[in-house]
Length: 102
Image 1 (tube, rainbow, N blue to C red):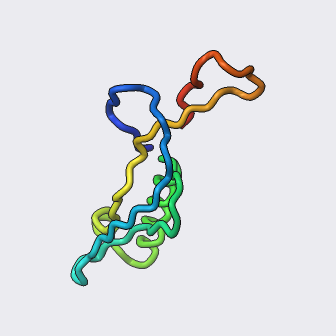
Image 2 (cartoon, rainbow, N blue to C red):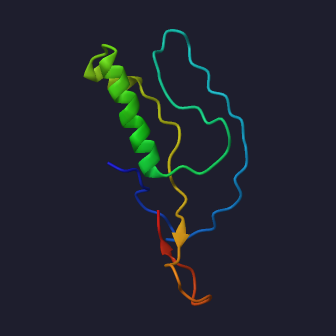
């Protein structure tokens, strides 16, 4: 169940710069939502998001929450939509951009 976009217009794109943008998201006290907070800007892969999601679910199930409560209480506000390309090791320069790695 790794996250990936359904369809993109172009297979490869520029990665761009990593910029820090602060967008606060306020939860009311009635909502029991859990999530991850990034302390510094950086790139995160789909497998990292999935592993963190599983870890939070396990922790909540151990604390006594039911399966439905655990599923509804996790808030995902990030999505891996930037394809990162990589060339194989020991390949000469040139000959275009590498294949999509993750």
